[in-house]
Length: 142
Length: 75
Image (cartoon, rainbow over the protein chains, first blue to last red):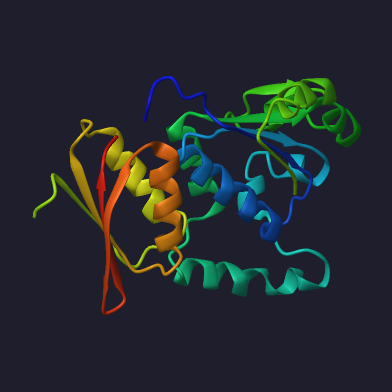
């Protein structure tokens, strides 16, 4: 890795709190971290609920598919794919994945800072995310 | 030719082979070689992109009986 190379940047708005959407978020983040991509995750609405303590373990499939959540988790385990919590841990170990909680969602949903997992780096608003996203090479809304 | 570091990622799915390779290569010195064995068919394109992005050289890719062997030189 040449020192002169500026790291690439990825910004993701994590709006969904369901298992099937959180997987791509954490797959891309962990892989991005491994590829020296500085990754910024902005959790809002249902996504923010996943940042509550135990939230990632509770995430299930959306709507009518909820009943199939256990089966899906079994398939994920059988395929030797890490859990969301394990992927989050790997992201943190890599050190270049930042996690932000949306302050307005917290207000609306009555979520306090102490309700959130300690991996949250900061509580921010839309302007902070835009500042990062405007300068990012990849921007996604999941 | 033997590699400086060997990594067995067989049976693991995306993104684990790449994650483990990253961890391994961080501990290595530039010029050293890493050999990774994986069974995830997606890993072929993944290792090509990962090596290119990280400035490493993918020296060889071999496939035999569903096992992919990648030899990477740290850049």
